[in-house]
Image (cartoon, rainbow over the protein chains, first blue to last red):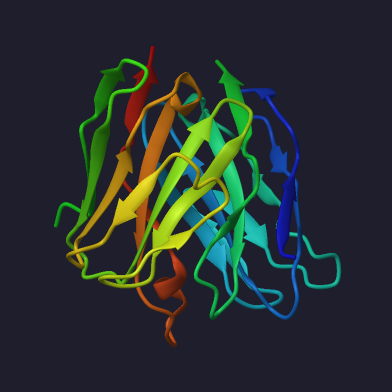
Length: 112
Length: 117
């Protein structure tokens, strides 16, 4: 079945450091891929997405590229801020799926 | 446009009590979902609905019931609460699949924190 695996946290970085959160997936065909972010005390919100191979999603300085050959969708940011501290979820869905498959989430702490 | 709203925000129940969590969305979405979030467990799907009058079981449906009598509302019921149901509950909605990829995005509510003692 479809699944998403993302690196376990917590990930702790200093402000302005480079961030990578790894995400790999297992799915048939060509799923759509997402990164969601959950700030403390809030629900999840979409951060970025990509719907076909080699697409790059980007938002708020974050980027992720849909790599079909490595079944990956790693999240990157060149210079993190304290305000980026949150839990990040990688997810996938198929065109006709009723459900979205989420990874377990990666907690990110940014130190000033 | 309020998006997805959840009522109540917090609740404390005693074991054996019942309650209903309400989710409402104003985006005319067909699909609605109930998740629970526990430390270290990520999100787990409880029940979902693909349209008014329909419901389906998710990953962890036991101990919960749902109803979708109106398109904009999705209710989650606990008939006899247990301490294992202490969790944060999130509702989400999504438009129907179509040509636009944006239709696949889920929109989440702010959550309901439930404690069962």
